Image (cartoon, rainbow, N blue to C red; front, side, top):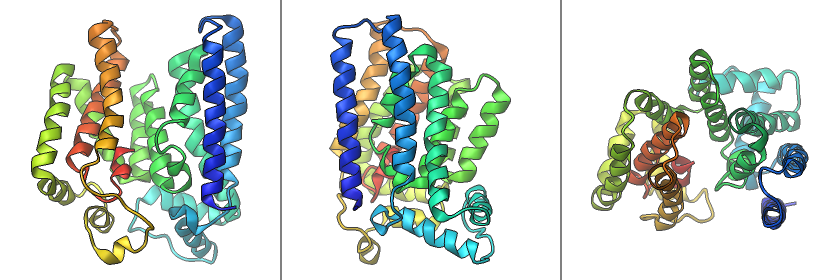
Length: 316
């Protein structure tokens, strides 16, 4: 079974559930107890379906990074020393797992750790309405890709979302630190989170997001070099993302470069939603405002490097 077949089946299952939820929403109020009970059952079934379906996929180079991790896992199982050139926690985690389980079990565990934090965060924040949050997260753009290909990035972002859902600041800081130790790119939302704690004027963040668009159009290459030199992510990895080196591009089948208006439009939906509920519907919630501020900051930074190869890795 190739990755495209697995992906197509996954997306068709999602489509079916979206249609069922939509049809039911036209006949039943969201607050109805029977609705919430059925969504709780559907959510629990869907949770384990995703974990098992994603976690038991075949190990294959069609999933790109998955096969690379499988080779690294095999090396560790054969006694290779810990690779300290990458984020230390994930390497230590992989080396430990290589001594007590097979590669197949390791990827099942990774799928579990990718999905469960989103479930727990949804339960914490949305209480009995958790299904809607969880479902939105798992049908979001690139969710499947970062559970099957960009595995470390996916794990790190899920743990970061879980961190934001914690009540105690110590727990939030601990899980944010864990997410950064899995994938260094999470330093970007970490900085955004820190800024949001001290500066709460959302209009400034909105303005910065809009200004990022003409700045990216006018000075795209400058911003790529600027963020490359900051060292947020390993130099060799970032150079691969930002460069047009033919040898690097030969490793993939197809790549779309240039200003990604499609990605920008997708991101703008979230910007419009936040603006609409905060300024038009006058929805007041400190946590919601903080999430919106983090989203605007991270997305504005991504817009500045939107031309980069694998721009979706920054967008995620």
